Image 1: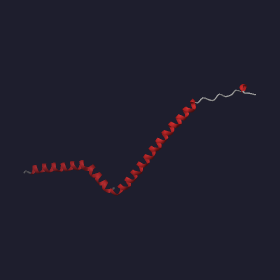
Image 2: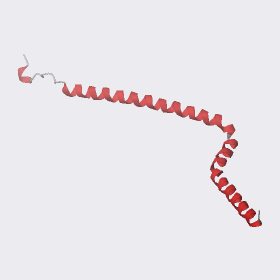
Image 3: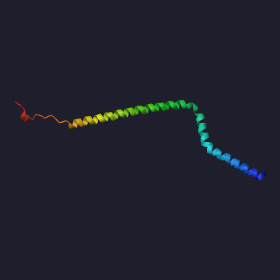
Image 4: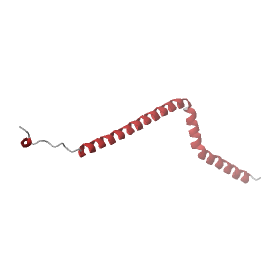
Length: 95
């Protein structure tokens, strides 16, 4: 092999290594970040479970509120439809 061929092969090899490193950089960064924060996974999982519980409580409260709104609307409709009893006028009162 000529020295020119060796230089071309070396250039392509270096370029391929640099391109591979650039493509793998996000993956390697995420892997390193995960290794750094491996002890925090338990805290994160606990916080995640607490947030799920809070969301469940809020959904139950929302359902309860919707049910109460429906009951209130029903009661208001019933009161609006109710006819007032005939009141005695002062003229028709018996002596």
